[in-house]
Length: 415
Image (cartoon, rainbow, N blue to C red; front, top):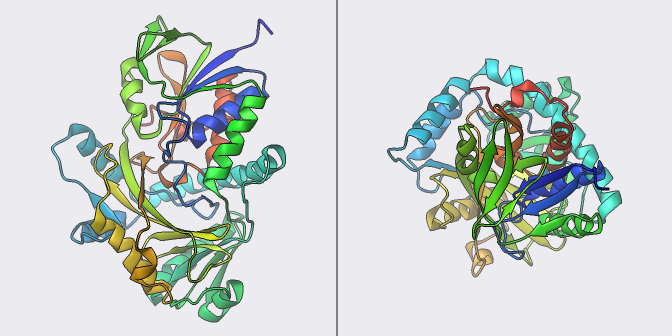
């Protein structure tokens, strides 16, 4: 239809693709611009593939500063900030410190829980519409190998049940009943029944196929270099090479690279890239049925068909995708602490994958319009929750493109 709305989506990860899907469902003509090649694996590909309503506590949480300082001293720990004289990093660190408290957690937990539960339902709807991407609805185990860790998770379980997220505190015997396929060295854990896991590569592939059927064009190896503004709107995006494209709405969903573009139109979004690694074993010595997280070691474990993926670390050090072998070894060492059947030899020859998570300083994503550029929407800053919150974010983006409002706690101008 000649009078239909048009949209350009900058970014072909899970947030960009979900946004394209929900916008197209509402009759918007969409073009997706992806800076990578069609077969390159961005942050959406190699992640843990978890859908986690259990994760309603923001990254900026009480105790994170002290814990992070201790981890900084260990080259194999799950967290590291690369020291450097950078004003953006210093501002981000100050804002993180200001939000890592109980008041902030209480203010945000209901929003994150609501978004996650809605996103879980949308994943179920998606599986009916685009095909089987390996969605397994057996829950998540938060595994603890210390009593202190279990006590902390029990408190999270209490909060979860108050929010309508089903959580069961388990001893080691109950954990073994829930997932008898694997030997575990744990004192107990928490079972979050509503959590799920899936295969990210299948999800991305099926979404791309569905979008093509819906008439959405995806252009790979297409980099946006400039946003061309006229008055209170961005009238065009300029591509590397000089081509210009116009649309009624522009979505910036480029993950960790989004601030480079948004600052051109006055939106200085505090954000840092948090590098994570994953290792996928094609023939693991044991294959659990449920996804899980090692609470003390901060490693996520996801069965994907016959393979098993281990993902972890948060390395804040700019948009750098190089692999740090010490951090990777830290993941392997943690696996052996919790799953004693696994040995160093199991990981020999396994190529580590690295991806950059876009991290806001308060642990909430940015989903909103740009002040002074009313037709530009930004959706980024999801940290480890990008895949889990992909569908609900896409639905909210479509709302914004239609002139509707979303929760102001997600606003770009909240700092």
